[in-house]
Image (cartoon, rainbow, N blue to C red):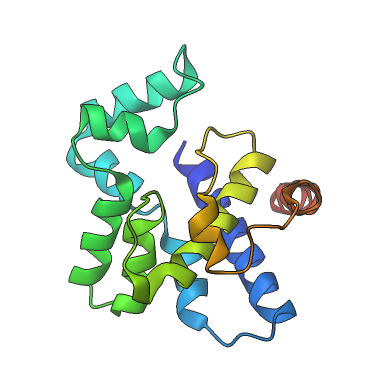
Length: 172
């Protein structure tokens, strides 16, 4: 649902802020990228509501093992990451925000955005695992650019799950 998507984006932003803070990195564009990385879902919801509904239905039914962006490619012939990047670029967001969003589900990432994309992939993956959402595992060679390839995701998922539960209780 739209509400769940915004909760996911919000908790990805919080995790991104935490990762940047503990690593003493000043990269506010990554905080914005985490917040808006799935805005393409809203583009699809508004522009192609029937096809978006088909993806929603498939995500809830027998297609549970298939990542959502793979369903988008087959039904809409575009992913939410592409739609979101186009929207954010048209709104005047800098390339440093929309490029990691564009590539956050792709294997081919331009060298100048590999670090940002790797961190965004990691944050999206950890929060999705905490929420039990289908998502492809991040690519090891991309994670290597962020120094995250050896990181054990289990403690991060546990921490994120606690944060998700805390935020949900706070919102209610």
